[in-house]
Length: 500
Image 1 (cartoon, rainbow, N blue to C red):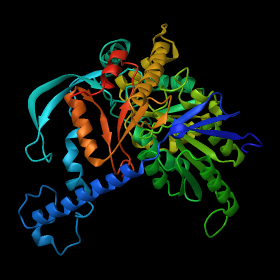
Image 2: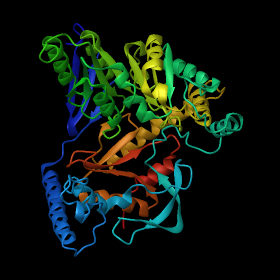
Image 3: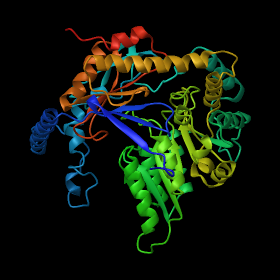
């Protein structure tokens, strides 16, 4: 029972679908995480084992000068000093990652919209260095950018407004908000964000990563306890570590694990002294960008209320991409924004811009304005970026006098449902929630990581492939990001079976 008698009921369906039906949810909550088949897991480990053996063989050849070594290494005259470079730590990079490095950091020379142009490049030393060939690969279908609502564009209302803002304010501010960098544009943006989120106040920051890593230390410190989901983003992890708080990790989206930690924290208190914790802060994300899963927010809020903890919600991927109004995971579940103590999100995905925000009670925001390192020391957000956010947010809210925002929200939802269904019908193992525009497709074996990325590019499809250490070693995957800018023809092209 949670919150005095409301039970969470789960049903396990074929293929490890988990359906949650309870009074806390206003609709079925369906997610799929199929376990790695035993044979596939064994073959994956064997594949990594073979790569490791060949890696040691190549290191042996490099040591004796039979193969050229491209990595940074100690000078011979410094061999007796404390080593600056750890050979073993770089083993994975030079022997495994380097084999498939051509799948990342591809230079784009157009707007990263539904389609994009790529600069062609080639390597003559097995991906250690690249040279541009001078050719441009045109009209590559973009399935990798977080362009959920299609606002990454160089024409239209957002682009026109950003251009006009550049002419009026310039590109850079050259100062912090506390000094000479607080523009009326920034004030308008923060008021709009607060209204969009349904909170009392908000604050904008120029960098999404720093919104987490620099603000969490201002909210928690010594004597505080942070409970963090095991799959939280690196920015949340860094912020928690910088805070100096005690950190305990609960299993991904597992409410039993979270409740156990909460109970233990209250019963046992701080280590050694057994004093009560000054503060217990729960860190979760709206959509987890590697899993495609959605946080069980109604249950988290119920636990947070029962055990008197604070909730920090990172909506980087969910704001604009979920909910009937695009209001994120809070809007998706039909919850009260006041039940989330700290609402964080970024403008880099659904709004086609840069930076991040924190929303909540006015006292919270006033406190951060004077205590957050990101607020005090960071340069103000660029004016055209601020204007891009304002214009796109007003379109989403319908304050531009058109229905374009609603159309894009509906299109994203339909595209997500359609694309996920198509991949499942083809027999692929897909992770995540049925409503998540982040669609991880499992590849498992290390050889498939590079092969899949290269073969897709041959067919003019750009996608993201991910492997260890960003994922568990046996759960390599391709990650598709669905956008409202994608047409049905584009999605059909991507999911078309390969016949050659």
